[in-house]
Length: 233
Image 1 (cartoon, rainbow, N blue to C red):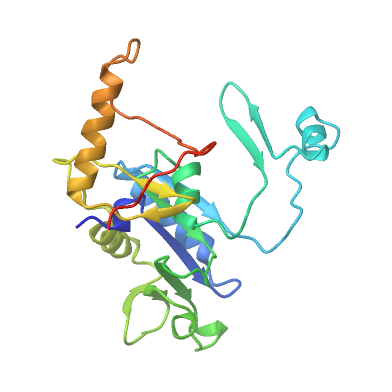
Image 2 (image 1 turned 30 degrees about the vertical axis):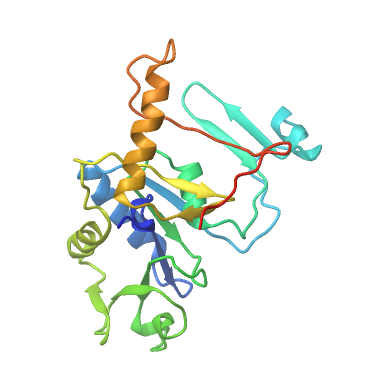
């Protein structure tokens, strides 16, 4: 049976201030990219009202007007300023923001349930570990031995990378894949349902003109009017 593991894997690094989360995450991202994986990064901050746009610029003025989403598109990159709902499922956020990624690496989000976490710890910062306080900690990367959980040294980037690849980057290329979110929440799909959705949608698309040799399809469906569907028991 297919589960939410078929969505883009999202793994976040947690730890005390100055534990080295960012340094470790960057080294892991470099290692994954050197092996050909596409990586997205989503970092959490507790600061509100972040100002990353130049005051007086057109994009700044649109945001000042209260526009919900403003995109600045340059020849070499795109910057999106968008209102954020922290209640949004992180897997849905990764799906929206990093659709081409094989894996998304987060930093923070320690209290979010259901998100696999890697804790970074240093002896100089104390012996209390977050793994005993927050859910879903898969491993601890530290400069001291930690019992009861998978433990890596701060220098063992290769070992940590291999662990995450084994857990989250095993792919079955022989089957088509489909991801489904309803109202922003991921829905688990069996192989049978994935196959039905994939072949049905591709069949419709291939019947249309100017679709070319479609390999990936994105669809957003929103209910309107009196449309309703009777659920079968």
